[in-house]
Image (cartoon, rainbow, N blue to C red):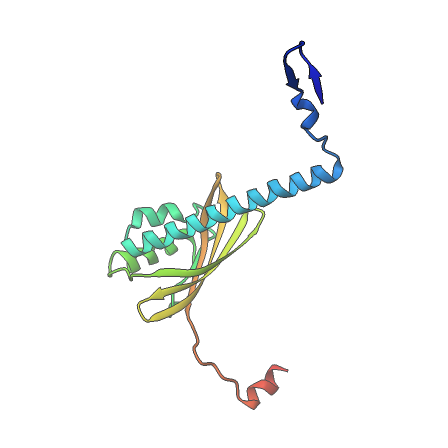
Length: 171
């Protein structure tokens, strides 16, 4: 909408160019904001996951303690170890792995993030030289930050083949 301000100048009424948000436009705007929130949450979870592996690789036990939730209901399943429950025992296990021995040079690839409200899961491959492990890490939102509550790593089974007997059992 254009109106004449005086005889020699024209001004543009910018309010005329702003669309009124109908219910469809509001839904699209809400979905866009939700997508942005989801992307930000996924980035924050990936960052928390990377902090976990950085603490692990560097043997920084103090950093490892801050990555984990303060809750007592946490668990860890180190490869070839029995499951460990409770924050005190979980942290003691990390002390054994990181401080009493040389921490392994573990890196990750192919992280997949699933977020459900205040819980997030990261599924990734841990790479230790020529060895690969599958890992699942569960995080909860705690005081605005993503904190680890569960870590489980297992060797990747390579070249797994089922014979006819095992196929019959699976059906």
